[in-house]
Length: 396
Image (tube, rainbow, N blue to C red; front, side, top):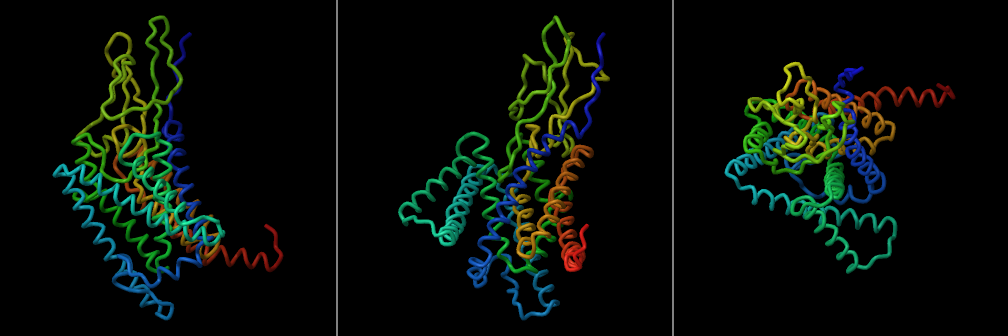
């Protein structure tokens, strides 16, 4: 007797995909916390005298009043968001003019600077702290090879996806660590400001990120940016054997944009009239007689920003998640745990909302707002409660 399989829920379909994107985010945050814990006293003094784009309007001092720090942090965040907005619109313009090679080389050069200079500086701090015996020539050769392989893996050649993913996480760790060296008030205001910017840039009709995604969709091209892709994706495939009509167990495939496997009879389609098209794609599995039944239930191939069906998360999200927990690590590890759980919960909520609403949603606002809220609650309320319980020798 043939049994109808139980329809799979969104959580069952997307659960493994969420894990595949949460794992690298967690690794990135843990590495930043470790770096902050080891190098907190070494590099903070070196950066205090350097003016960056995030501190060009106001240089925070410990002698300033809270009101002055708040106004200065707001001004720094405003300047930073304006610059990021202008750069993003410039990126959209260059992509519209099909300057893809220029953008690719520019991204490669930026990655070379991050891996070579930022990574080299952090490596020097680690060599100094742990007294690692290494000469200058050996260090330079190792750093150069590490940098060249990273740029090649991310932009130039098609390497194993694990290598590409690993280097993307490393880039996120390096940039996030340098962001944690910004003044405290500026860092927190910058996180909130970037969350609001992400919300507007993705959801507003004229938002730069929305324009970029729509342009990439219309051309069926990759977005010229550093994007982490959690592949492969889940699909269900009917067995084409005429002797049985059972459904094979879900298996993993590497599916590129516009692929169509005629032997397996899989047709991937999406409504191109809406931005949600590449976020959740449907797979229709036609029966053996060649026509598709109207009541056939499509299965979710995956969620992300590309038509490959895989979850894609911008590297900027990695960076600002890690900046939040890195800044929390400068205060106490209890706040780190609270912020980490809040960020992961916010990321999971965002991915579930993507699956339900099928619309492009920013990844920063929910996670960052929850992280900032949990940081304040932990620092102002939970820490006081735990300390009082410990002093009173109260076990709970």
